[in-house]
Image 1: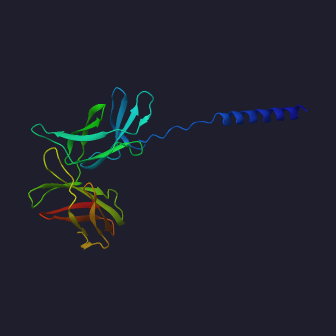
Image 2: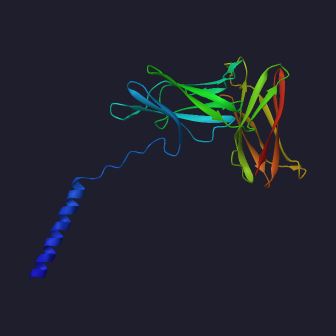
Image 3: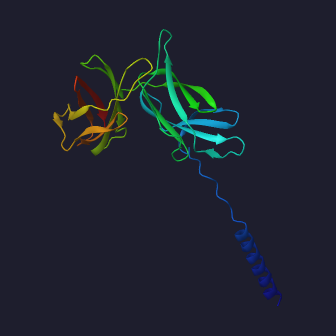
Length: 258
């Protein structure tokens, strides 16, 4: 009898515990939209905190930035604001900016405000984040060297910057091939170029052959050109690019190793 009574008490306690758990469900922790990104700086204004992240190494070339805004009063995310990115390299005797991409509108994308810069040379840079109605702050960044940006002088006497964006992790087979093209109007203004015809010729100089089924890059938006490049084997590849406008011809190339 005592054994049966002990079992009944155990069952009653178990049911009670289960009931308590059901009445008080555990609220899952909210997912941080910046999870997996690398923070490069932050600043607190009077009412909000701004945090700046990137998703890759900061080097010469195309670099994405993401700004997360949080209300200091309740730690909630702000998803509607005007956020702008600016860049500056102070070389002592002269200063210059770089090609920039800022989102239009005021709505965050996945709770973050994205932007991008094309760093055209290595060294110490400053990025400034401007949050409308709150202020701005500056972050120093060291930009590592790379061969992802080519400076080209066109036959129209203008300076162009051709930037390799993809593939950054090339594989044998068909790969997305993406470049951006900007021109220099002044030391502070580098607008996107959207009217270029691009012909691409991949080759493997050490083996004396090219590859079939390539798709020439065509303009998508904001100076970005997208195509396909086919790597038929591992090794060192040369991508020759011929970029023509009505009044100019540009020729450059990128080396890609698989």
